[in-house]
Image 1 (cartoon, helix red, strand yellow):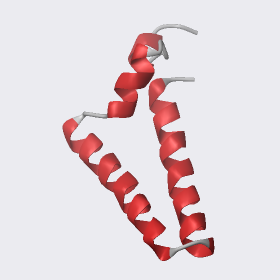
Image 2 (image 1 turned 90 degrees about the horizontal axis):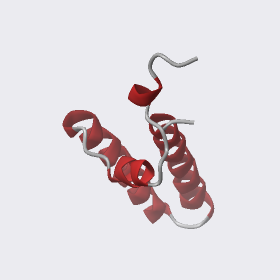
Image 3 (image 1 turned 30 degrees about the vertical axis):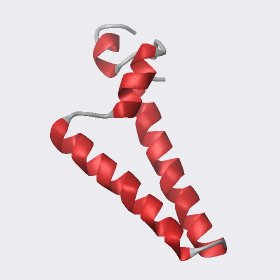
Image 4 (image 1 turned 90 degrees about the vertical axis):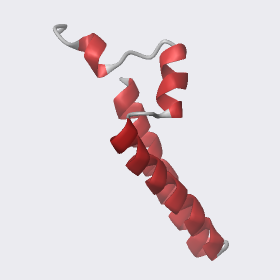
Amino acid sequence: MTVERIIVMMAGFFVMLSLALSYYHHPYWMWFTAFVGFNLFQSGITGFCPMAIVLKKLGVATEASKVGTC
């Protein structure tokens, strides 16, 4: 599993979780969905992702490091 795949999976999980919480608990949880979406948007533009930094420091491989391996 690579950093990029983990980030996409976590973002999807957080969106689904916040949607469920907004439906069953309180609509203000939609702000968390907006926060995740904004972070995905700014990460696509700037390339800065705090979760990627944490995962790399934990030793998780990136797509670039796996190029050329089978």
